[in-house]
Length: 211
Image 1: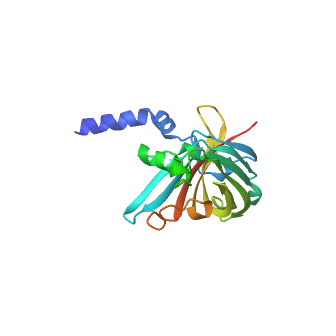
Image 2 (image 1 turned 90 degrees about the vertical axis):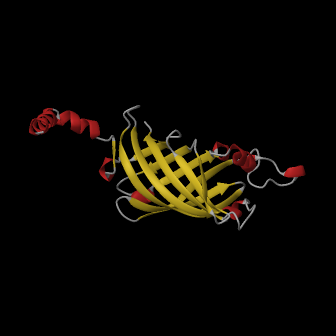
Image 3 (image 1 turned 120 degrees about the horizontal axis):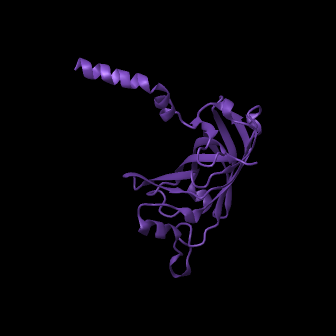
């Protein structure tokens, strides 16, 4: 047993650099890594999750993707940051294909659809104000346009990482965020209150710097 322990220790001491390199992450939650400029949303790695209460039994959730848009940011003046992003409602991802079809199907007999209908427009968020809470947290206030209606919302945002993407060498910064909206304010009021009016949005966003 002693010989095995000594051998393991010797092996670990022989490769300290390799071990450290293997665990080093490209992105680190270090605000000093962020440089001023305009960043484009990475559509493959930006998601908006949504959650509603289903009959009071349990939360039901899904996600939206294919986000496009920009973030303009200056670390020396975070409250001047601007966000303008859009995402297609048709990017809805759910475990149940039947439920996805329900959310996007036309109304019966020419009536209004229960939810979005088969050809919904994009949802778009445009920031109007940023209030910095700390080096890594801020409230992002803005207007959310969806389903033909526009309403103000607030996103509690947290900086989650910055660095160079090893796949494409793009300077990248990431954020997470949480917001709550009322779907009835966007004309999506079917089955309220047994399916909750309040919808929790959970955002995971990556932005890549533009040359």
